[in-house]
Image 1: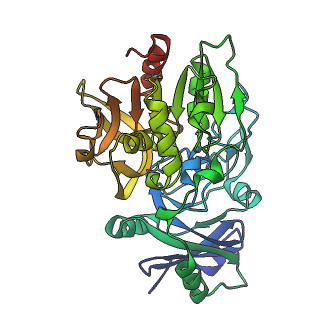
Image 2: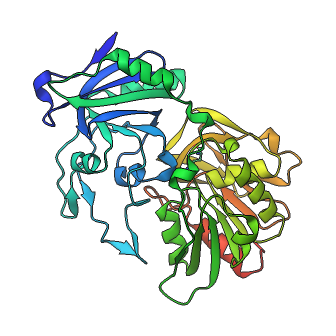
Image 3: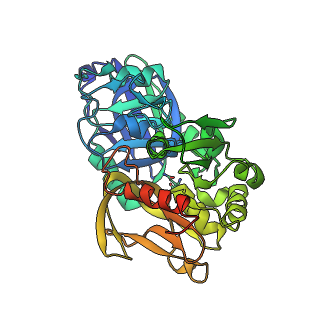
Length: 389
Ligand SMILES: NC(=O)CC[C@H](N)C(=O)O
């Protein structure tokens, strides 16, 4: 059965799109952005706004993103000229990272800062998009089945890419869970970022796909930040570091065997460490913990967590498909800091003795609430107090 939501004449973009999911669901809608075929893990975000940040978040590499909020693109795409310490605001990296983007309605952009509309931006970035489909129906499928691989094709209205071709593409695709995407998003060389005033300390980042939002917060707090490629050795990483950040990033953390080793070696030196999202998963694995795949992940800026050490709750931004297994932390020296209010999964850990703190959620927001930016205060305190919290 093919779900069709369009009238042939209703695609002002002049493009059609087809989506085939691993469970056989076939959906047809209008296309936007670039013409082409892309395979990826199909995931959804419950954000209402912040599509520029989400699309440029390197943690979405290898995924086709479905937006649950029905209207996307109203405020267009801002210029990268609005920046802080040379890092563009609103962007989480320099380019779109998703394989494809699926929305319900695609209104024309109307905002004084907009330099493109969403359609143009995807087209210029060679990323296909689909619109005029019921994204809630796709989300319900994903909730029942769990996240799954899918193939998205965008083609001109008077042409056609057949379902059999999409099926072949999907069958030939490598599963998301076994691939290492960090090499794709990590910088190829060391990059130094200076804060506006004299630096208070130097943070070395093992950059597996660092979001600019995190970088902006570190710079705002007066740190000099050095980003290193994700294959950097512990010795090199520690050369100029007063503290280390293990960044967010795409894919299954268990695949990153070398990075897990690096994290272990760096952690035992006793240097202050902050881990964010993938960084927290790598820290947990490095100390002997386990991670598992969530059924449909946590993606959006409206996710409640509780700090189990103070019983305070916060609304956070999250983007993760894997989580740390609670029982596996026994005997690792790591203890639970935050838990997710919806499913009780772990959203933060600390180490009993070593100066290590880590969150599964994103304290920087980007997009999303700034309720937990105090995590960066805590990190700064640790760095300036020789590791004491
Ligand atoms: N934002 C992230 O760092 C995501 C971490 C990991 N790729 C996951 O999906 O769980």
